[in-house]
Length: 194
Image 1 (cartoon, rainbow, N blue to C red):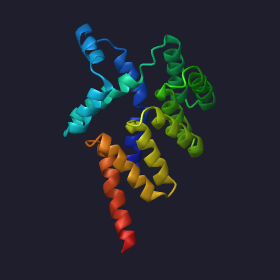
Image 2 (cartoon, one colour; image 1 turned 180 degrees about the horizontal axis):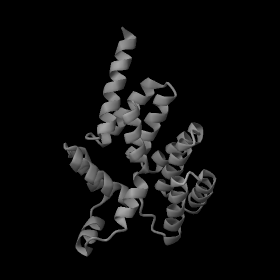
Image 3 (cartoon, rainbow, N blue to C red; image 1 turned 180 degrees about the vertical axis):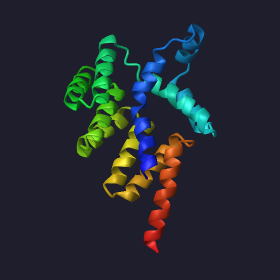
Image 4 (cartoon, rainbow, N blue to C red; image 1 turned 30 degrees about the vertical axis):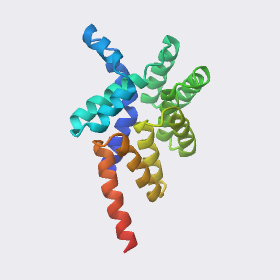
């Protein structure tokens, strides 16, 4: 359980990592090629990918696209919020992320990042509310779904957690954390029904 939670936290922290990777131009041709690939294309590839390594590469490309706000000001606020989260300055992070959700209410990654910050504070009610908003804006957000599954599991709602992990796998079949969580929960729940 602990290793699965750690893996999910890495997924939830991926927005900051993906943003840093997306902002490091390795090659102009590769950058142009990445821009030409749509989210729909990436999700199609993610669903077909059977290797965990290949799926992780595609997932990083999806995170990079999710992090594109289209505004230098929003990107700056998101970077500051990411730094505040890393320093566990949650009041500052909450203020910055709330500003982003007001300025760019359709930017799903701001809601997801704030949901992650609330999760780290163990404020599950606010985290779930922001996850729900994230999923309204981007129903395929496997990071938000993973966060929701972890919260449901931690709060004892294991049937709902299992159903949510299955939603993650429907989008991202090679997600090893989701696979492990499904196996763990199925074994636990089948043992309870005996």
